[in-house]
Image 1 (cartoon, rainbow, N blue to C red):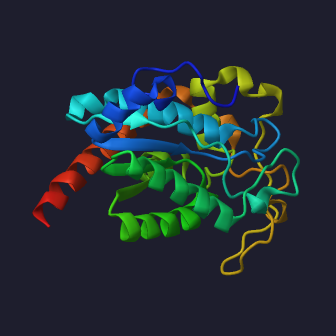
Image 2 (image 1 turned 90 degrees about the horizontal axis):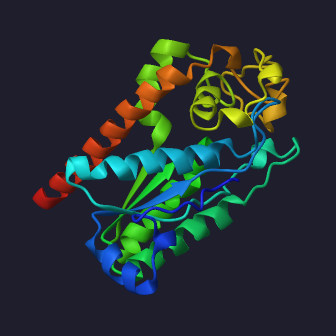
Length: 253
């Protein structure tokens, strides 16, 4: 199962329209989890980024009341911009303009229903550029405050301290997260150090298999789900503190 349908009270998916009519305007943030469906080497499922978005936003929304924040969580958007992974089977991509437009339409919808702020919690690197353009347009056109939160940015220091510099796609980090939340989806017998085919300094690679043999980076055999549990807890706190600080900063403007 890619996206959990075991809804909690804070999930829009559990609400009637009457529930949503009250919950959306009352929430400090509406939360949109975003991932992708794309190859993640030979040991992880194509749903890694979407599973991360689903689980990590659950952690975020459940911890929000400890920071005096209330959140309504939208269903996870499973598809993203993944054209660079298309040579490997199972990848499903939206084009960047399509993805940007999808985000804009979702944001405009929640704005129409009274949302004050939208936080987009992103767990896929390819989504970054169209997401920024969508956030810019929505804020300028509607006044809805949009916060694109790239989850890994908030965890980067801890991840680099533990795994070094090359822990990226399907590597040490993503294997650790998947083992933490969905260990049954990791093919243990297929975990192996990823073979780097090329490492360009300035040139943009065309497709991901141009730079990696198996489809990933780093060394999945270094995965450490117990360490990752600590990172998730710390990163959740950091994101919530940042969002609350932004609310306070906006009141000064």
